[in-house]
Length: 393
Image (cartoon, rainbow, N blue to C red):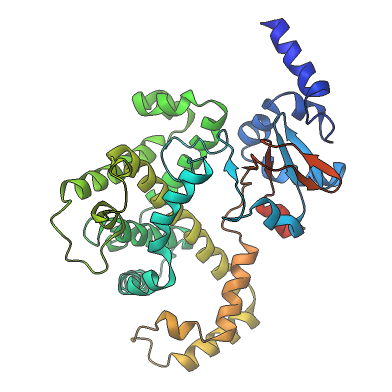
């Protein structure tokens, strides 16, 4: 065993096709380098990568099998969309839901699965589901008014996560089958707690995949690693029950217009039956609810933070909204909001300052040798460019 480990380290340092790339020798030798910053230092690796670029330049070897590039101008070269074949890094995409779209590594299968889900997030689909969103906005506003009348504070991140959790789950399974946390007398921090501990567990599970399986079979040992894991497991089972109910009601039709995501997928004859298995839909639904809660929730709270932080931005934005929306009791539709130039600019700036994806997203080019700053990246090597580098670049 010792001889094998020594031989493996020597190969990685001197004989590997990646040996020519600059970077820390320890990072080239072992994945424990990332483990230290990600787990021991509590998720600091994404920021440490920026420091490595400052020391080693725009191309850095951050792991034995992974190269990181700081080059916003070549973003489309790496993330080439449907024009060129890109696979995912199976190590990075391990999140405990193996058949979810995030963990689908093959280019062709991922493209097929994405095309099924993407139809529910096209512009017209969002316009069709606007009444659901408006209804949850009204309920959220009632929570703000209740807090104002009671003269108590309302934690914005919790409030927006309750809103996004209700909205994505109701869109996925139906208004009466999704979460309804906004209807509670007092907004619970459970949604925030569930997400934080889920991401922490995923971060740990990437380095020790067996932890995820152990956590589902024996929750209590996992609870020793993260005291709130039981809350996360509870939400996962709630989503699984929603999927199970959708499967049981398949063929009965839905009175909701538009039809919720998973009932619509089950009724779609063009979706293969193998893609309608419980385990497949449950994996995807758990990921959809998690990301559909976290990403827009953070985007909302960060954008509002920046607005309130700058009195001049707040004043100009409020003036434009009040001029276009004199009666606050009436719903202002998306089509009308899109015509407000300052509002649109503020929204885009909020998304820029608070990127929805803050981690790296490694990709593998199986058929191409990619070139960056004089370095040739061999076929099949994991390569990425993180959001932080795009912002700081």
